[in-house]
Length: 478
Image (cartoon, rainbow, N blue to C red; front, top):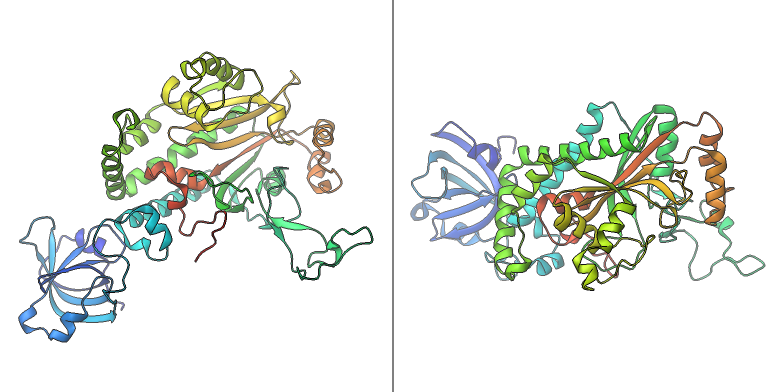
């Protein structure tokens, strides 16, 4: 096994007429002579040329789509079109058989819906091979970005007793017997008898714990799974997803926006550089998909152009109030084309409004700031106007919100007052409030939904297609 060379390395080779060993899965086998073999290192296959006249017929019958092979042979320049090299096989071993009558991935086009049903095998398709190699690069680029800036990578808890968003959409965690729940005298569930001695849930955000780290280490980031028990069946929501959440001491809102914009540009640039072949494939895939749509629904830019566009343009920065004025005055609002009409200041912006600002009005990524405090979380720093908070959201074409963040409220009395107004018990978050009691300082942070970033960079239309095993209402398969 140690002699094995990956297909990607072979195709980039400058040597020929050397003996090589390659291992992978059969994509196709034509005329009992040509095997297209793929090992997932690239979308490109290596062609194996079989001397079928001198090969055991029993072995030939076992070379079927999906079978795993080990092939040793001579790497030669290809005489055929479409490939640079062939391997003239001298030895073929079937490592794992695949029944062609039962193997679901036959060499034909499959719908994304069908592939979601066989998510355990969809990695073997070109589309998903490309997506998950890009996802891998983006994840590495995130760590590289922060490590180059001397951030500390902090692991925040997956099980927590707090709901950072205060939205109550958390998955409860318990080891109580659900058929015989212990009750208190007033009939409530007695969580004192639970494993942790209190009610706990899966985390909706690592932010609050991240702030604790920033108050000692200055700059930290978390990158881990988060969970929302939101009964949402849209193409943009998952019940389990990954979040990148940096928290920075001695940062204000401007610093926060600068960092978030730099992170997005860095990760996109990294993927373009290291996954050129995959992004080229996904660009063509999107273009083919676009051809099936009516002219007015087609993208104005190709995937590659859209990614480059985000790198070449400074993000447009404006306040929520300015955005509301633009939306109120917009044609779709006046002609009642928006599903949610913008009638007054204070409206919670929907995806259609965010995409209008990005795709139609400014035609570039947008950073909105200074939202009404009534539609934002308790921990955001209050502005002097008494109406708005130092929040910022970054909006991307095709996606809408991709980053949400704010300067955090460092003033204890203001934070306690806001928590009281929103019904958030201060006694449960005593540890969080301690950071305001002992050496409080201006600080800021944001959350970047990793799957939304992958969605944007790959050009896919459904967030369930950019995470290996999607979790959503009524689905926890695999």
